Image (cartoon, rainbow, N blue to C red; front, side, top):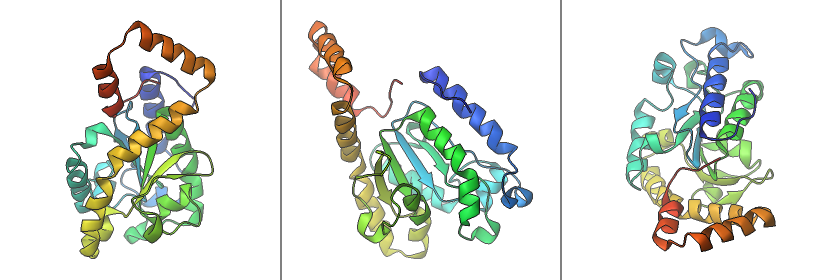
Length: 233
């Protein structure tokens, strides 16, 4: 799982990671799976969604978030004019825990290198955590009740936007409104993260970008670039 740069490099790296995940036997979850679920989506997206683990339908299909929770996730994305094709979706663990139980620490540790590699390939501006296990990976000790819907910075410097897992709203109806309210704040959080990352670029890069803007001034194009979900690595 080598690092790669550029859109083609990202796609290649993500495909290699997926192939490795599908043949993985790093933890006992592999023994009971029908299919591993590496993740899927747009390899140029600035937004990475990270859930907890596959469910029964995901295990049957090898695709993330295709059950009832996935249907709600699609509704949430549609509420802000996005689709699954605009983001990249994966999980903390890539194989289904028995009876949909919580992933064990050893299982999360075994899968961590795959998620690390996906992050390096995508270089997302924002990681959207779906559920508490995903949240703990990026913001250890944070409680989802206090963190949800707010852009945070992880100890590794990543911009994190915590949300409840869509499955939680299937069991607790009051969380549905919370999920929709939170996701409506995601586009603005993405812009804030991009601005922060741009300010942190090396001075030489910022200087070249300023020269490029002076040579081709186009405010409309700048605004369009700011609103797109995709990036150039």
